[in-house]
Image (cartoon, rainbow, N blue to C red; front, side, top):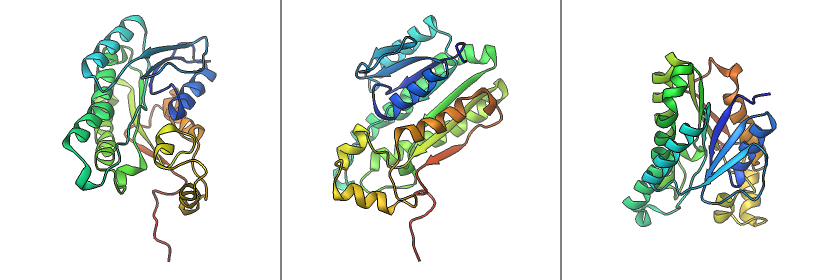
Length: 243
């Protein structure tokens, strides 16, 4: 049991975030969800805050409140938005907004929890990046900021290693059954089938696949693993050239 662990999970109201939160709850964690919406499911150890992480002031206030009320041991920053556009339609505003959501919110949450983590010489930070960090058509703002998560996390890993705090990244490929994925690829469509066929494992991912990777990094037994990126993509990050 891990009843001495309290995790902040952003975007835990559905999709990958909900799968991560449920996996943590199953292992005895207390989980605090930060998301735009209240989860449509409940658990005795699940708390939630309805919050817009695009708003830096609101995010900072929520982070300060949570660390006053809870001993936060884990932070999983999963909340994300794609804003797909070709180069000609992408805007500076898209980049700024996603930088706040993907990078700024992570900085605010981790910064608030760090004093206690450092004092106790323990902490686990898991940042959800994306296979799109390697490049993806029509993803100017998304790929840039998801790649930024990797640089951010590797830097934090170096700074925080002396304190027993690990920072790692999980980079999912196409994950079926999530709102973000199906906004772009309709469920049951020919495009969805073609995408699955193009993945070496010949299937799309599931939220539980990502949750399993997060739980590896979250474990106390993973104390010597930090600054790493784990692609959960069915082999899609290995290469696409078939000879």
